[in-house]
Structure formats: structure tokens, C-alpha cells
Length: 266
Image (cartoon, rainbow, N blue to C red; front, side, top):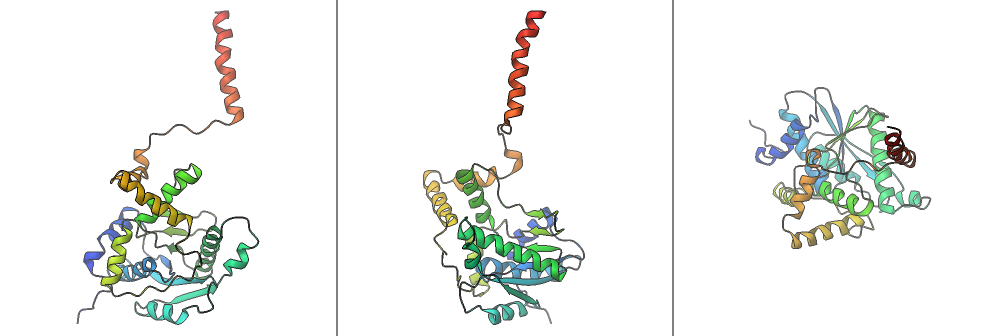
């Protein structure tokens, strides 16, 4: 009797491409999925569970959720039940983000992201996983690229594969070729039921502002999103060299004016 797929093959083309193009998985990998309970991480879980059935090698999967303690009603049972559908074990632990933020000077979103990443990486190492899978999609990458550019003057975004040399972990992002609208549609098609985000800042973040600003740019130029996406590729860069430090610049000035003395002597 044939098994009903967790995710139909027609929906997995972009996932397979990302995994193969960026060499995300190999024999013997142990991958911990960062499962928030939102639409993106739920789809990633279902999709990787399907990939696990057909990959030409064996790799292990499990899920992990950070209870940020924004609500007293952490949906542990619902998350465990969701993972059990795919034969996956679910892990979780508490991180009091609000308490942590009170002792820091940065934004609550930065603090939350930092502590969730740290808790996930720490748990992965403790449980013997060598890779962590995040559910960032294409819109996330473009919005991050845009936000970094306008907010800090940096050309940087999520990388498909990020080795962490200090810990030996590798971060992978298998959904980077999917648009957010595609995931919303597929989640509905698969009858997944994302959990409510308990974050008190949901919908009121810098990322949301970047999303809306990018949407307005598309009113100015319908291809603005596509052009930003193209600009993320290294091969398209024609940029100025790195800014000189004071010592390097002083050396250049000295060398430049020394030419005048040299020419006089000649």
C-alpha cells in the first residue's frame, strides 16, 4: 500500500533545488528544525520529513521550540502532536525573553532573536545534532538585505548555508527559493494549522516596516523586489573598495606626495 506523501512532489521542487545547489545535507547528518509553530516552520517540518523518505542517504530529523514565555499557555502538546505526524521527536525549553531584554540596551526583537538562536544552537549541541534548519524564505532574505542596506549601510542577508566555526554547527535554510505567498498557499493546501504568534510586538517591528516599504517601492517600480533579489548574488556586485582606515589613508597620502619629491630629484 502506497504511503500518502506528507508534501506532494509538485510542491518540493524548490526545496530539492536549494538542498542540492547549496549542498545542505549529506549522509549521517542530524538536523534539528527550529519549529516556532508558524506557517513557515510547519511547512519546513513537513517538507523535510518528506525529503527524508526519498533522499539517497540517511539523515536524522527532530524539532525544537523555544518557549519565549510571552504567554503562560505554551502549546507543548500541540507541537508534539504535530511532530508525531511525521515520526519526529519534539524538544522545547524556556527562555524568558522579556526578563533578558530588561538588562540589555538593544531592541526586544534583537534580544528575542539572539536568545532563541542561542538556545536552539545550545540544544542542538547538547543533543548531538550537527545542523540546525531555519525556515527563512525568499521574502525574508530580500527584506533583510533591504533592511540592512537602508538601516546600517551593509550589503548582507541570510546565507543558504552558514557554518559556525566556534561550535561546529552548520545552519541551513532550505526554504530560500520559496516566496511567502507560495508558503501561505501550500500551508492551506496541506491543511496545516499554524499556531498564534504570542509575541506582543507581532506586526509592529522594523521587519514589518521594511516589508511595507518594499511593497511601496514596487509601486514605484514593479521589478524592485526582483532587482533586490538579483543584487543579493555575489556575481552582480560592482562596489567601491572597503573604506581605508586612518593609517592606510595616511600611507597613501604620503606615497602620493612623495612622487613630487622623487620627480624633482630625477
